[in-house]
Image (cartoon, rainbow, N blue to C red; front, side, top):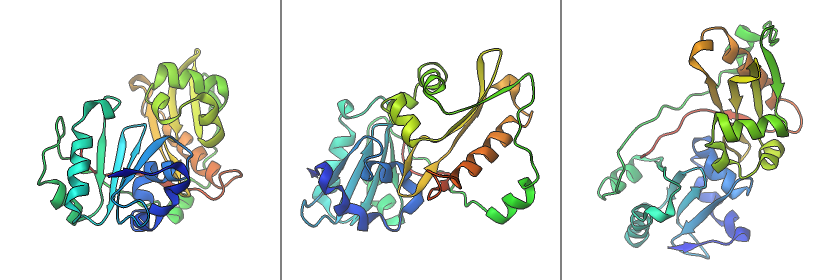
Length: 243
């Protein structure tokens, strides 16, 4: 398989049309919002593609009958130096799932993930009157350099992979945070942004769950999508693949 240069990434967009928000991580790489690599079977007119993100999520699309390309993909997956200690290979059709099942990928197991569709009418009915106000002793913070640094360094180091710097996270990402006693306790943020979609992470530490904190941050996240500079983004939840 061949690796595309940055200015060639657009060549694989037709192969991703049916995937859309099922692989925002792949679209973020194509948009060059976040780092990754793009491999194809043919450089000029690709019909099969493997897209890898620095966060460890990979996606296969296109023609699943190119045996040489698939053999290269399996070889790539089985080389530990290609990964940051974690990978999830997403396949989005039954044909791809059946094909990849014929091969052995080391340190991997088959999993399934559920996709969710956002229902704006139900959301507005349920939350239109909710005042997304965080009351004492909790403190609400929007995404900024200081909170992004703490989030990436201490609370959720995975964001060091998906966002290569705090500046990149602040420029392209979305984040809402709740603290108490100078401690992060609840977060709603975007691990991937691309192709007009934003994926969503919601985390609340155990002792502060069931107090409505995640609900309020989720409302703020959705409202942020309707504002500049995020007004063209849609919410995406759920993935499926091999880990």
